[in-house]
Image (cartoon, helix red, strand yellow):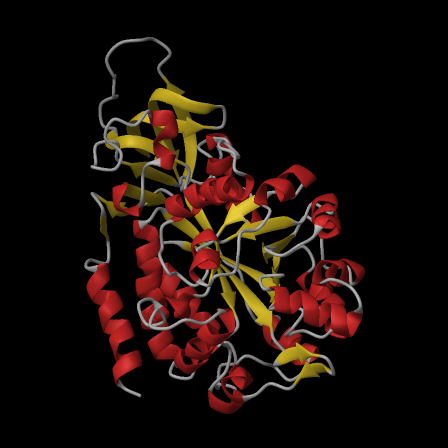
Length: 446
């Protein structure tokens, strides 16, 4: 049995003061709140937690290998499409061993930012030229091993990627590095997908890369194979995707996914930046989750999506750091609110409780971890303690600290009852050195 004591904790009913949390076997067994005023009263033997304690954060959308692009794509004007050229070049340099080292360091950086579960949208499947490794899921298994090493849970969202794009004449063949992403046919993807296995710290889900990369006749197949497992899909990140889909299919990407039976409560649409009123109604009406990735969407110049309208229509929201221009889930939550302020010219678009839910329970659920993301008896014993005495948070009201804090203020992270981060330090040691060792050879050994 392990116990922690915190001055403030974000419980299902909101902020509470003088809280003791007790866990056994990786789950909370007691949550005790002192209901009298006065000095804090930590019980004997309880580990003190600084500041305010939140449920474990979920990074619902990650491409781990994109972390190596940080600081290498800011030298010229361009767009999402020119940035993608650097992505392809990087993808060509990775093998399972290099990917393991990079992902391990990336996931450790996530843990330092309060992430207890990552949703890894995985499409870098094969070797050069599309040649399968002896173990067909060697790259995916490297990601699973990396998350275990870093001390966080993972939902591996194995992506079907069959086409090189969508143009006026239809879908294009895979070319160059794209061949590493594809399985030739949807049945080839399904066969490889079937060999992936869940465990106590691993969930398996499916992904449709996009309507650009998966022809319409394969969409329903992926959804059927996914079944009740999480299913994620990039949706309307760029206007060009909408235009191409309209040109070939005569309907929007959202309408196409809906027509093929892809949308629903177990599906998460990532980005949904350029959706129209009809799309919003469809997504909300089907209960499709929407994952917003604000720091990536601003880094790539994607635009500001209609997050408030999507939530109001019925789509639960969650958050992801996507291409990892930064890894700071508190900033993602703050940007969800701030971006909507920019678009609407109004403040207070999302309440703090909504932001906490997007950070924690909403993201955990979208990844198949319905028993995580909340500080409650029976839930997985995940917690994130955020300091209230840093240069960023000092003086902030505890119930608004989320809008002041950043990843650097995360002090303690516990995953399934195990302390992964303590005093702002990860159990693996110097994460910056790990990142440098993994990333620098990818740019110097070409």
